[in-house]
Length: 316
Image (cartoon, rainbow, N blue to C red; front, side, top):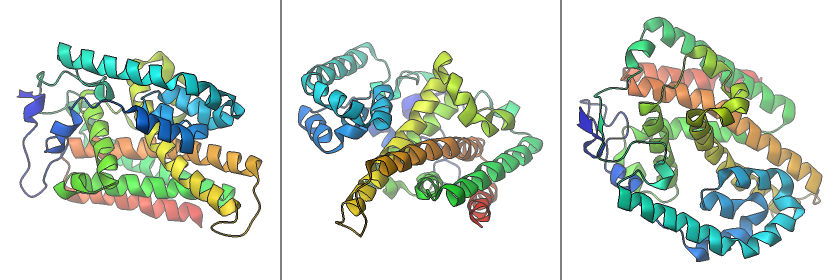
């Protein structure tokens, strides 16, 4: 048994296979939110729910995504709510620290001093070779479907997001310097939260992974699946904000020709958000599952290569 703060053993030549690295100290810190940052996000990304995502209100943040800040009304109402939201977040974080609970951003995880088994409890059930073959088929299906979706819809941003997810997943287990680089550090921390989740929560079999985006509709009834969906929604939300911001700049003629079409931008926004979440979930779960099962480097890289190959096959 290993205490969470001690991490798990390293495997020679492969670096950290999960969350046992220096960044764990940062992950299990208890950061407070700043009003100045919340106000800035409200100003520049409020229509997309950026300030609510920052304050760990993913559900209402997503609603703001799809409604354009409630057609601007919700965005204006939040002027009067931001102060209270920041205060409530910080009070809850302080309470968790005092009671020895996991910090708010890892609320679904065990307390930091809790003992963990040397491998995930689900490892024996998921380690058979036949399950690896089934996961490979799911990877082909998810990646190929994403490529086909991009070809038909003309929305290519989710492919960039999933390729970034694959790169971060691979590099995060080998390259400690990733956790120190600006911007990439945030994505690296997100990848560690995902691995922490899967270490103590079964990623699921091939069938459930193949239909994860469909089953997510019922996630509200299962706390663990809600936590998983929230992690992928965060990835989708941030990439969607980035891509939509560039689309708006281009539409306004600052970065290129074209007129401003709010309806078209909102459609692209919704498609990008949906596709990023729908296709990242099975791919991310499969890669992290086999990393935590300590598959050989060859297996992990082949699974990643399969995903990339079938994305481009779907595009053809």
